[in-house]
Image (cartoon, rainbow, N blue to C red; front, side, top):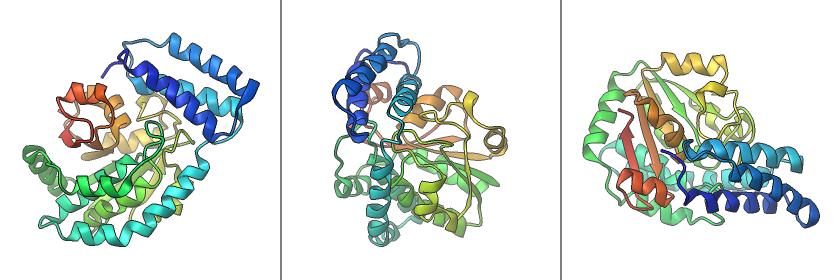
Length: 283
């Protein structure tokens, strides 16, 4: 993944959307937007988009002095928790319980305010249980789960992490040792330790943060504790498009990416359609 010219309007959309969430407007908003725009103007097309977005959101949080998405994260954790019993039943209706857990986890990946202004969570659930999963990739994933001693689960967004609990419960029932990693500091609506506790994640697993505020997983900025968990994992389950952007070039066969395709640049890179659900191995 590299930055495409088509990414540039998306960067500006993130700036405007974040300032709206921070309730910053007028001269202050225009000044911040101008400075953020300079980051976009100097962005390297050789970098993955998530690296540029990371710089933009660091500036926006610093200049506004708030976590712009705090309210959104709390709201969608609550919405997802209300939907969890229904989702558990839906996943249990899939003949292969592991597949049901994967589909439930991917359904939550639509809760992404780095890309969307509004989301249709119920439609995402319906699509995730109807669209095709690559049979070859799922068979490889099943084998990786069965043979793994230690699993590292890379989370993405608040709200989405509630849906991750369906898959995590299945892994727990299989007797797997799972470490779940969230962000080390707020960035967009990505989950932090506080968000994960609010979502009930501690019920299932060991929970750590990655020590970074980077979008996706920028290994060079992560903590040594996280890197130890990353290096020692037999299987790494990576949620979300930004984690795909930042990790796919490692060509690591331990990695399995689970996400919804949410932009045309990623769709073209994968030969998929916007809205498709993806389960693919890193190498």
